[in-house]
Length: 257
Image (cartoon, rainbow, N blue to C red; front, side, top):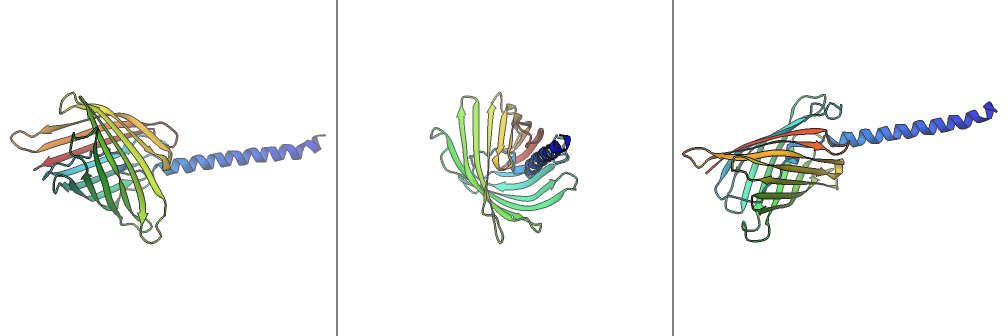
């Protein structure tokens, strides 16, 4: 009797092992997809453009997650911008750095980003804008890409709500035909100009990564000038296994006329 049952048991054990291997492979694939996030994946853009204003900006993130697929991941970007008029602000990213788990930091390339204000501030139920950018990657095998999508902002009393819907597509020879989508939301409460607590939320469906958490933002006018220092810091927490457990965010900008 034992001899007759042995093949069946062996087959069931083999199938069980296959299921476990398949599940593990799927988990690795999902986790591996999440680490492709970049510094501009963790920002909620405003649709507003202030004519003739110039800006130097540095922003980045760092994962707080000991898992091998996330540990040590950081990214940072430095950009300069100038609002040509009251509806168009081009921004040039002079340096875009990234560090993946187990590797050193590397320069990714450059990017030209355009913020277009589509409606006058406060005229309609919400303010609308549009983001359009071209990203040049300097490493072989990494394709150039375009990004585009609507920017929305709504102010209700001291609350400010922003939402971005962004699509990205590779361009050039051998580029993928797929569109990658991400969305972001920011809600802040204006206690005073230099201190606006709030929350931010980010979703990257292609990576199966969903995050949200507290942030603080604000700006200071430099005495005797028309210049301002703007800042933003916070942490967003992962809602699922494919997102990092914590992502620490930081941004500082110097704005002047």
